[in-house]
Figure 1 (cartoon, rainbow, N blue to C red):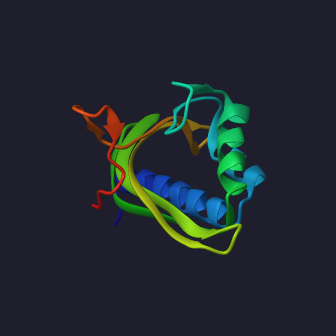
Figure 2 (cartoon, one colour; figure 1 turned 135 degrees about the vertical axis):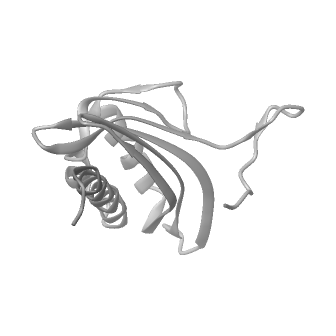
Length: 146
């Protein structure tokens, strides 16, 4: 029999699966349902923070303009679940076929998710996406794989 924590972790993993599906189908309305309205996103592209669901969806809409077909992978998702908050970290890769027909393997990024349980649904209240930084050059290192 599953513990309550295991049940809640399974619900969060289902939410992450919905992110994968929403990105694959470029479904902004579906993605909107997975975030709090006041989500704070430290995404990979400027500015330093994106505040609110509309800013987060604008980032995804911008990404979709580059892709004809999208593939999104989540690897090594590790979760810590409390009663009303949870956090997790993983490696994610956005790849696919660009609008010009070129296939791209994308890059692996590090992702941290912070979830809040609202009306029995686990919603993303904060996410952070990053690549390691080469301190000498000041440039992101985007060719690493998990």
